[in-house]
Image (tube, rainbow, N blue to C red; front, side, top):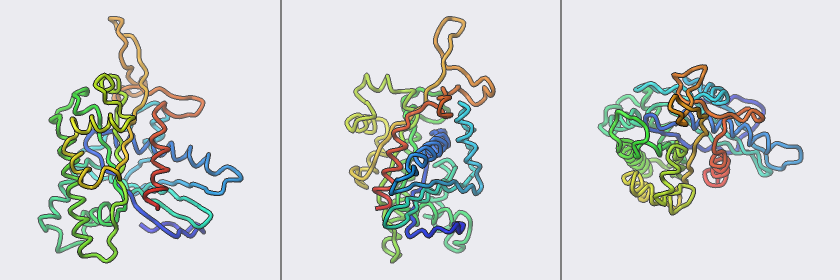
Length: 315
């Protein structure tokens, strides 16, 4: 998709593709990222600043802006229906003294499992005859033309904290398959394409950490430390961790994320999560910071992610 001409010349554009498994919290992560990008831009663009940051969302087939708006109301976004593909682009522009750089985050709002099926069909040669098909464009946009990968992995799933119909090891298996498929396509592209784009870095958001933090810390798995991440990934995401190791863990960043949930006493006097009063079907009510008009959440990972994008992906 062409960028609208707004009188600003961008000298460099890079891409970081976002993937997540079923119910991994990927839409919530994108909503929180939008909120934090807005905050980051407000700080970076103060009068007198030499470097500036600008942010915009291009909604293609996905109303992703709705996610941020609902999170500001303490409400989780709706879950993505299975086997559907919604797309949007997050645009981050870094205006520096020596020029302007832009990072495009093409967001394929579909289950990683669904995207893996597309990869499988390409590997079997089913789309070689007609590369103009929509699925073929997805492969190019999200794999061949990407400079970085962003993975969304739920902490709570392998621990069995949430009630899930799928096998508890499914997120690990599917993430590993997805990464292996991306690596495979990148290797083929390196051999055949003179304009090959290597993977500059991988970011992993470990979502729903708030549900498991106390338990994991008793097991010496504080996900805010390198040692804790290593212990957790080795035990609960061993397949994914192995594939990340093949790429090079020194080029992978892990960020645990979570939101604070409102609580109430039930009939037995127990403290339990509170359902959202306006829309109980959306699940628990997120605590809100009314002064900042945003949900209470771990904001540091998102600020560090923006800096990572600037220093690693745009380097």
